[in-house]
Image (cartoon, rainbow, N blue to C red; front, top):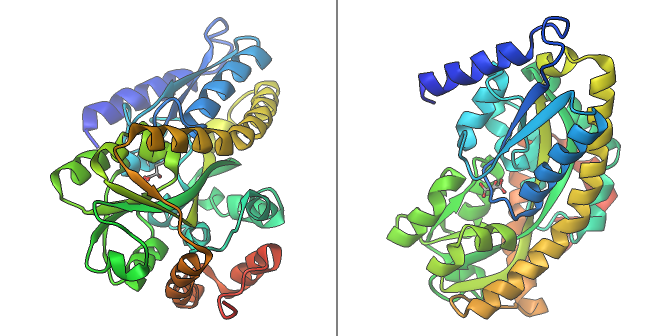
Length: 337
Ligand code: LMR
């Protein structure tokens, strides 16, 4: 990360952390940085939170949302949060490994959730709460889980079976589970910041990728991918996180109002996520630029079978007990396909 950018952010943070008595008229500024477009589940929920935070705190807190990697890219944003240069983020659950919280990668396991209901049993239940607690020793407080949706594979050649991805360079997020998933298809995983994916696809640096449709559409990846198969093989969602020191230093009444705003924003995020993805799928189809293929039940089963070994291989990384508690909620069993 550029030093000047970081110092600027830290100076802003120091200002916002000043005692309220000396800054009675100044709102507490919360910079909320993220990497996706405004009109995505995360982008819209961030704006919603900003609005409600302003209203519920009666202007005492001001949330500034920076979308589309305009402030920080993937890896930078996590560092910036820990350093206090930015106060709030909502990184994908696949991006917490580099922070040292590899348990979050359970959400990357192929086909572990069949639908949003199964997912919510984990994110909105005791397992989700225990996961957020794991962030505390890293100087990060987890506030909520926000949905995006289920990922599908895209490339420039048709994808009907796992063999169709063999040898392809596939862009992934920074998750060991995703790396293993791509290897299970005999393809080549390429970790890359989200902001660089469109160009990498356009220039052929990578051949394909995996995304919920909202990301494929709003980043215009569909313009540079001729084929999309609705494999829906994995989930992509977010943990909304804040700098712990900043959060705990807030006046208790403001923190309580922000928590209330976050609760509302979470309900909103998880309501619109599917709608946005469905809407964007229609737009992708209408564009005529990407051929959208719906796999048959047998074709989907072939993907499930090819990817099941990822669960076994990643068991020790995620933790056997944690994995079992997730399977208990979702009913998934990698040995019974
Ligand atoms: C990605 O890098 O593909 C996603 O994590 C982007 C996002 O935040 O949805």
